[in-house]
Length: 500
Image (cartoon, helix red, strand yellow):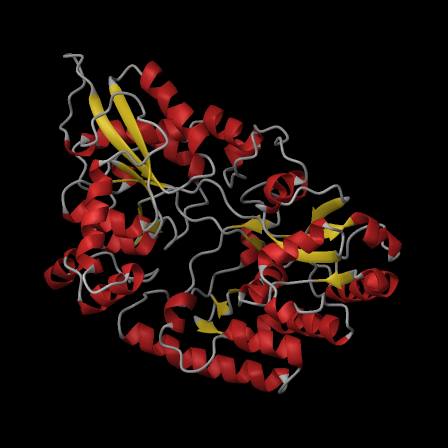
């Protein structure tokens, strides 16, 4: 699989390889589907899915092969049928309603069929493009791979300038565009916050949530001292996986740094894990104080949520999906809220990283690109996007939506709404670098230190910097990323990009 930053222009041999799976891809598909003959069967299964109904509704009278029909609208009055593929299930009922409305009201004789695909979405997309059954519009689930395989059409050639100007300042390289060409657009994102039990915080003597890491350590200790006999602890994170580290560290680290994200320094073009020193030390101190919930090393996110809903955890860090969790999955009556994640000194030098990938793309193979573009503009219309946010289906990263939106209909969501200190970072070469890394990944090494205090943090950071530097040099030499140093980068310039 290709990584963010790889050039989009590919030689003939590479394009042929993109169409025909190599031995590594065959092994991967065998691993996914299992069985001696499962590879063939899985391909047939996906092909069957392409020809069968796998959506929440029919989306009108569209033909399932609408993506392969020519333009039929216009003076003749015949319908132009297009297909729209998505893997999003949480909003499928709402989106089907909006597709039905579009089919009933648009004056361009366009009929859209929405398909909510089953598992193995990326494999289904690969099969669809190789068999000339690609959808006209699709959810972009793997941006660099879709671009490098030639699946996506350049949007600037299809969407109006007046429409695209709404996204000025947001279209960062290797996330929404590649080599300066726009292929997808942002929509919603995950906003990271400190979730805290208001009553437990007040009992610890805090009338407001901690703003510095030292205050967070102190609050966790005091909450634990007051509630330990009742099984209450000040802090938790799901250290069963690396995300137990990355959830609090990425949020605090990006607020604390004007230069770096995921351990990668944009200005120097090298990895420097010094950016996480303060938050790692704070989490280690919480564990050493006995303020971390017992069993954190084997804690997964849902058991953590269950404990928080029962009032047993004072604080933890997670994203804007949590209000829905405490409304439906783990309903709770506790008095909880969300606030900006603490920094080393309470000062914000960068912005809190917002996880916001691409949303919709238009197939490069679609004969209905003009119709597809009109549908994309409809889906991004202010009325639809504002209603979407107000129903609590997702928080937008688009300023024109946030400026027009009222309070979403979801308890607790107000603490996650975009602020001037939220922003979308350019892609880093972190994930592709880790495919070439010798030894443990940064998240695993930092987690071990937080839980055990083994080794010294100085030696850990120095070792990580050296190993990641070597791995990054290999990925660059192999042409797997073209992300290079940007001496002009400063994350403080992202402040105010999503909200004022």
